[in-house]
Image: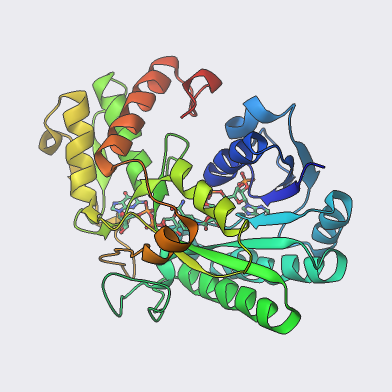
Length: 331
Ligand code: NAP
Ligand code: F7E
């Protein structure tokens, strides 16, 4: 019988890639979707006839109970979150409620209605924040620098606690930044590749950015969802760092993107102090040795290939005046 998988955050970047992967694996896929006054399914439009969507919100316990009872999942991937770091300073309580408490609500539903389901939590390298060692691995202490990072630390530890208290198969992937042509336009890589494409096609004049020296360990989302799936295929629930092991600055993203469009970046990029954060995460670099050894996972897509792929997609999208890749452009 086909395995049943429930994905929260299925309308997001990772949710769309994970849904594709689970369908390839022969799973019956359920997705949690929250009510919206417009169409939030752009990224999964090409999958809508193959998956089942269930109404629910991480802030609403009864909807989570209902989703678990209806789907009776073998696996639950919790990808839903208020995931944009700057918003977490403007909406700290909402971020704590969704990104932090939402996880304990979902774990409670599982404990009550499907305790033998396997559970994946989307933990984040933002938990390392002001880093205590470089590179960061599973044992590196946390020092989050934003309300988002703090909420993710709670979510991470409550997942461990439910594993230890109730013997749930609950684990976390501590994922470093991962991007794709489906990345939200507000995140820095996509902001750069999309605006560069607009500049190239005469639809924007400049690109405003904050801290160009911040460095991240950037990988491709399509590679990272493979690791999520692998974690739930193991005998034992454990936490894993998922990263490429290479760090690059925002400036390097800009350089590659403008090289791809063949224009000099210094003429178009403006520095805007309003885009700096109250507390910055300066430099993140992950060590995914454990995932490589135990899951036999490794990243396939280089940083440069990723940024060039995103620019190429954005050039097509800007030309067609749409926001997300059309199904034919899926990557
Ligand atoms: P994303 O594109 O921002 O997607 C977030 C998803 O969460 C969307 O489907 C969104 O639904 C949903 N959501 C938001 N609030 C919700 C609520 N109250 N109830 C139910 N669903 C809600 O994020 P992503 O990049 O795919 O990341 C997936 C997960 O990994 C997130 O938990 C993120 O924090 C974490 N993470 C991401 C990265 C990364 O670099 N991408 C790295 C580490 C960890 P709508 O479409 O309706 O807004
Ligand atoms: O910023 C700098 C900014 O917003 C990266 C989320 O998926 O990954 C993501 O969080 C860096 C920061 O991602 C702009 O100051 C400069 O240092 O793309 P970002 P993030 O904050 O690292 C982690 C792992 C997650 O878990 C999160 O959910 O870029 N930066 N200028 C800028 N950033 C933005 N957004 N916009 C700028 O104009």
